[in-house]
Image 1 (tube, rainbow, N blue to C red):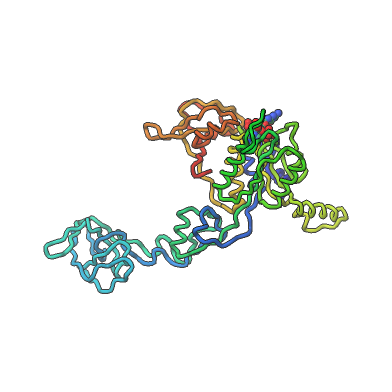
Image 2 (cartoon, rainbow, N blue to C red; image 1 turned 45 degrees about the vertical axis):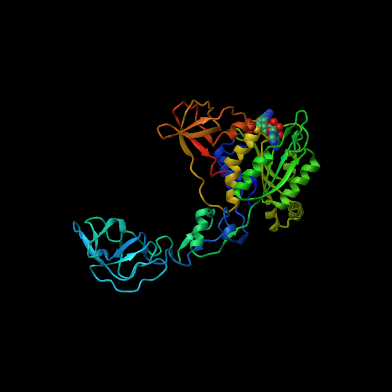
Length: 452
Ligand SMILES: Nc1nc2c(c(=O)[nH]1)N[C@H]1C(S)=C(S)[C@@H](COP(=O)(O)OP(=O)(O)OC[C@H]3O[C@@H](n4cnc5c(N)ncnc54)[C@H](O)[C@@H]3O)O[C@H]1N2
Ligand code: MOO
């Protein structure tokens, strides 16, 4: 596992006091690694989990060539350009779930239902509504209506036996769960659920149930972050609000490091005077304090916090290396739970989570799926934007009268304003080098639906 210093050395132009948003993601992708432990879960419990092993098809789906329509099956070699075809139905109707027994000669067809196995030697189906029936019971197909092979579903055209149906790293969506079920599999091997601890810091933060107090605000970050984590499908370890006292902070960090793969905190990461949070992060782990060229969400602390046992092995390793005795436990000294120390402002918390923490946690969950692309929409209004930082503005995307997508800001962009976040359905991403936006310009939007 690499130290922060080693990762920083790999990033060109790394400056913790003026970090570009894109570099934050590059740094975090190097800092975190997927969990290794796996478990077997029933497919009803697999939604939102990440596949830890390829799913190889034990069978082919569909298992036979079959009809895609209710109609008549026949040998398509008889279709001739510019010529109608007249066929005589023979035998019983071919029904789904039963093999059709019998022989079909040229000039003959078999009545067939959707999903029924194609009778041997037949490769084409004409839907019944495209036929007429003559007085003699024969089926008439007009010229040039069909091509050979039409309306037939081929064996294995969805999934072929022995091939990879779903790859390791896939996030299991409802469609993926259905696909696994179509293979007759009851369970899958997934990575174990990620454990993420959260606590809010700050003496002015009130827990729900406490009476209002001058200068104090109710804790909202705990609820937004726990909501975002729950949607991500991780196991949330909620440690509540922790006052700005060294002993309490140390206990919370130690517990979080012992129980969780990642720790998220809010507050206390800018250079305030009353903050023990920064000091404690530094003391208990390997932590960098960043100022990111972005808005909102400028300050952020990132690194690793050691649990008590890791701290002990680190100090033992230090002792041993002092006696010039090298062993592998120095490797463990760089380990610990990944820390995402987010700023206190409620919108800054959500934006930093969506822009940075979420992609890092997905990597830790083992997910290899690429992030969904940003949407392009026309800005319905002019937006002020300072070049040299990435801005995430709260926006509402809607469909304009001409059917194209447009986006407008949801108002006051103060980083404490949750109301404009609630009205938004996405974040307008104004990139680092971008300047002011004129009404009618195209902008990128990170949509919330399906993302959070
Ligand atoms: N001299 C400087 N001052 C500040 C800077 C700076 O660079 N230099 N950065 C500003 C920015 S940007 C932000 S963001 C904040 C971040 O400060 P902290 O992370 O230390 O957060 P706090 O000071 O503890 O809180 C900020 C703000 O958010 C409210 N808050 C905190 N926790 C919660 C919570 N759980 N629920 C609801 N609201 C919360 C808190 O009351 C404050 O109003 O620093 C700026 N200052
Ligand atoms: O960037 Mo701070 O995050 O304004 O709120």
